[in-house]
Length: 315
Image 1 (cartoon, rainbow, N blue to C red):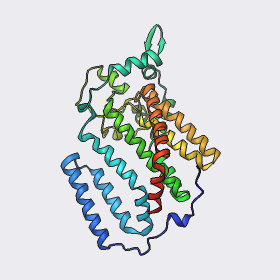
Image 2 (image 1 turned 60 degrees about the vertical axis):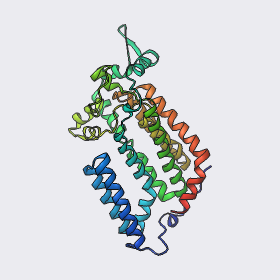
Image 3 (image 1 turned 135 degrees about the vertical axis):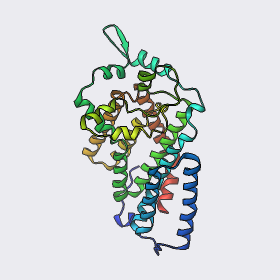
Image 4 (image 1 turned 180 degrees about the vertical axis):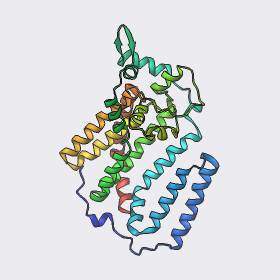
């Protein structure tokens, strides 16, 4: 069901009587602030980005009625980030055994290729036959795995508020499904096997893998900075990197803008290829991510859409 384009004034409708520092706003902010800082300082570990996020939310909430509406609409993405960041509290390898050799063997057997009589995964092949052009291209696709979904969200918020809420809440719902699967089946990524073999090592952090070439070629530290803060090393299956562009394509095509649909389709193919090319995921991880996105979209649209649209009418 395609929802008609929203009136721009409905999106940025002001509160009936905007009060910047009402008693309820101040009390609510105080309570949430205490919960936020107690959680991060005493449980997760307080880092600089937590202060930045808190400051941004605080300023935008009190600055203007329009920025408050924006923050309220995008609050679900903040919830998603907090949940993902908090996964480090109970790593998935403490819940179920980590699978290292099993996905590698399955990948090699069913999706591998034989070169000079030697069976190998596509990750191993690309690690030996990478090229600067494709290194940069893979980085450009991968670096947009979050910015493009957020950009679509901003566009939908301005142009189709009901569709924005469907997209945003489905996006988070798919992530939650993925998190559950992370804990049911902890799996090592291809770069782990290349670097550490099949023995589990729970002391290591994230690894930039094939994306290091992007940083080296352009003399930047983008991906090194990102993967140093990776919350969970053994969360390769499903590949949520591969799920995101499929969600973007599904909801983006409802705008019925041909060039945008083509662009989102290319984004899908590019992310899926880059995930394997850079040794961050096996092909089976990518397929699992696509399946997770498909299942999440179907369940959300069938059972949760009406609830979300009611919520949208109250924000």
